[in-house]
Image 1 (cartoon, rainbow, N blue to C red):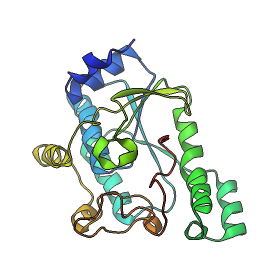
Image 2: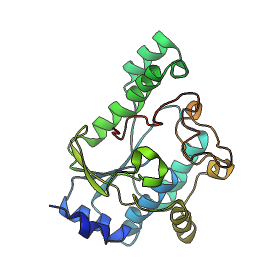
Image 3: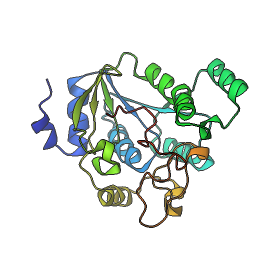
Image 4: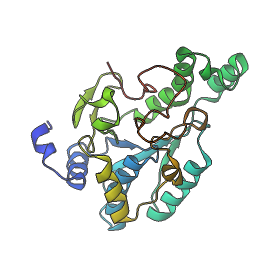
Length: 233
């Protein structure tokens, strides 16, 4: 049993090592190659470079609609750490049916259509990636959005039937940037162009000064600014 108070006192690296030892072979980490995820990726893979690898599987979801800069960052990250990142793609039949029936950009037409696209391109592949896992590590931070303010460092995800470990939940954005700089971690050049939260290309825009960090995600709609990967009330 994981004690939250104990987990709160551990550093990022210590927390990852603790969870990996508590649930051997049952811990996975999902990366979208955003800045938070790059921090966790570094913390996991630097142990492998030191020849003491953590027993954590790292995976990513390729929706087929990502920025070219994101794909280039994937390759730079693999080259830096020389460690595998398993890639999960959406079911091709489901994508074909969606595009044939509603076109390539149906997500602009309604929140329901957007959630349908996210469901096909993200949620279903995630279910496959989490199969057999007991712990899912995420890069969620409380200050990213009001939906995440109440999330804890360790919580049960009933929708995916796994424990969720959010080691950066209390980190500030400045802490993220300082960690990336100090460790020379590969970073997406789009971040310096106003893209704070980066998702699929047609669903992400740069934000203006003073805008909320997630204002650039699905900017055309009024919603909770979530794709459904992380349950919100």
